[in-house]
Image 1 (tube, rainbow, N blue to C red):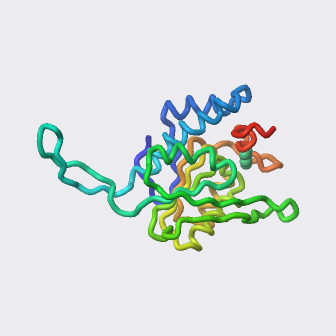
Image 2: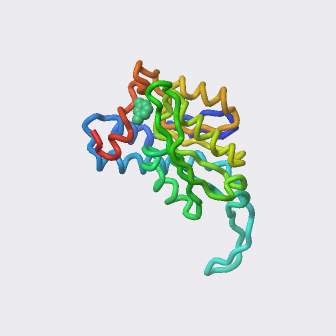
Image 3: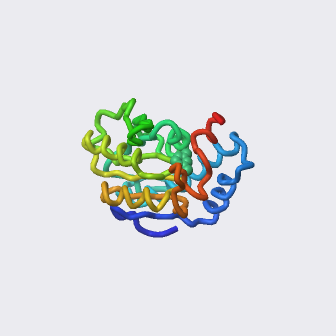
Length: 215
Ligand code: URA
């Protein structure tokens, strides 16, 4: 795994476990149950990478054999914000590693005329301005909905923002870097391109449909 999560940086995690699971995830023959499990496992692995610069402090503890020092995460608490609906498939993966995190929800749909994202539901932790925010969106495609979600958490006062996505298109990354250069992006793959319908190629299809079996 690479070694920095600087603002504006994109980290493409090339760990063998990630590559293997991503291949299974992309496969059109992978069923809903397996797809869900893979999204969860991949999110766990990406969370490991996305949180590697969280501050730690030294504390004194006692093992059964005597006193020693240990590291404990210090600094800001975490707020995890899945973008509905596909981001929900990633939530448990992060929560299983950051058990004390608070969760915010951001619901967006695409207006079929303007093609712009429209917010229909937002519920964020009250103290989000004091937290490290991790946005979850499996597919960073055009970047419009992710960008709107970033604007929402920024509007609520958040200043430390990370995005975990499974697959990104170069177009989506460029959009986020231009509009929100402070966001740190961690992905399993940067794919080739978007097609004319806004799907990532080769991608994995519609992440929400594959997670919830709606197609
Ligand atoms: N959303 C998806 O679910 N898949 C894509 O390829 C693009 C956006």
